[in-house]
Length: 165
Image 1 (spheres, rainbow, N blue to C red):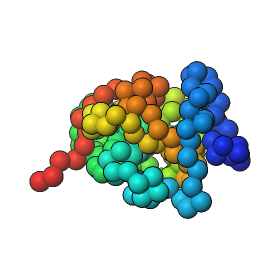
Image 2: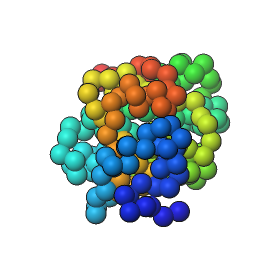
Image 3: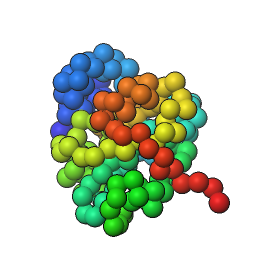
């Protein structure tokens, strides 16, 4: 799939329309350089790293789960494991990310995926009035109020951020 002129990935654009969020298309920012990582996105936008919303896919006893985390933090997989009540949580490969979401790593938005997965959203996202998330490609991001983003993703608010020792 190719992106539209606005930079919105077609699947993500369809998800925006289905959710009644068509106006978000006009807020998508497209960059000539990749915004694949939280650091790249924050640098391109000129915002704090923690204002980036990372969409990370993990395997919970082999079942994909999406974790939304602020860009300055890391996910504590043990906290995710406890939250889900499963035996093991691991990072998944790029192939599983694409099969599950329909997007490549670095461009996974918080919603609009190929398959419905459980979504955990770390409470740290609520520290900001607006966060920026991928819009379906490694070159595009969009802003949204964190509570709305979590609601549209069908996320459960949790504390799964790795704490400094």
